[in-house]
Amino acid sequence: MKAALVLETGKVLMGESFGATGEAFGEVVFNTGMTGYQEVLTDPSYAGQMVCMTYPLIGNYGINRLDDQSEKVQVQGFIVKESARNPSHWQLEKNLSRTLAQSGVVGIKGIDTRALTRMIREHGVLRGVITTELEHLDALIPRLQAWLVPADVVAKVSTPEIYSLPPAQIEKDLFHVVVVDFGIKSNILKAMQESGFRLTVVPHSTSAEQILELHPDGVFLSNGPGDPKEVGVGIETIRGLLGKRPIFGICLGHQLLSLALGGDTYKMKFGHRGGNQPVQDLLTKKVTITSQNHGYAIAEESLEQTPLQVTHRNLNDQSVEGVKHRDLPVFSVQYHPEAGPGPSESLYLFEEFAQLMQEGRANDAS
Image (cartoon, rainbow, N blue to C red; front, side):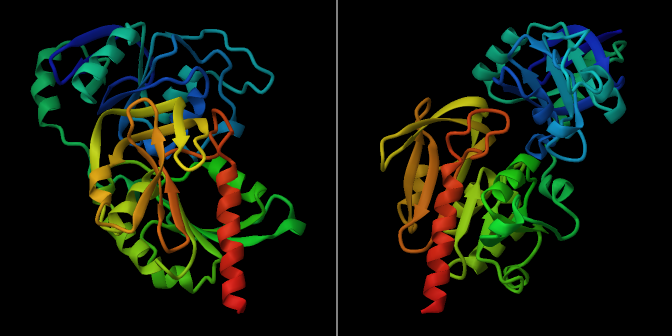
């Protein structure tokens, strides 16, 4: 079956349908990962977006339940050059097309993904629609131009209720961490469990008072989708926690932390999405390759009147990748420390968080 990708610029890219049929609207972004398409599909940070994979062959090792980052496919649509017909892997359970169809997600294959990526790099993130209904493509353009990106997508992907997770090894129950779920990936939770953290995961709307009643050693602010300025409840919660417990934020949590302390954020032209982003620690001068998924960033000039200092920088575009509070045990990074999929060079950040919590315990005891 034929399918089309229609962009707000009026450009129409013709291809073949795979996955579900029908039409889907969303922001069209690109991901540079050579592997990890299943993690991309199920990452809540992609809610409301249609993802173009720049690597040409996708689906070659199939899908398995172990690599899911949430309970369902989160993307609005999926765009690939070629979808593998006969995937092969010892953990294979089903193929990519079947997964998309069962999830009601429209996909398109056979288009020039390199050309699409160049369009996004030139124009910025574009609104688009994937459709298998080809009779009136021209009529889609005004609908697309009138379509608005959903505002508060965090509320749709955050956990609706509190739940707990033990550390990976019960005898190494080192710290109790409250995780504020703005759209967290399961790999991040696993990495913290392996670091010896006992976790209590709470909805994004949980207040600072409710979090402190759980008596955590520290608070973790998770990744998530959308514009950070739309997550007002999270910003207020963070303000209520400052100075009460050590705080570590990543991705959306990193942006919300800066907003809570008087900083500002902006929408990037095409964002950072993939497992190959070079980041330099400005204190040690060490460079790590990181996994990222975000379309917003902190405006560095806005931090001048705040208690935050820049600690990490992206070496591709010099954007802010990390900050820390000058006086309080509070820090954050723009990337995903566990990098699933991707490099694992940044797992040391959980050790730094543990050190802050250990110091917090010592201060409480004294």
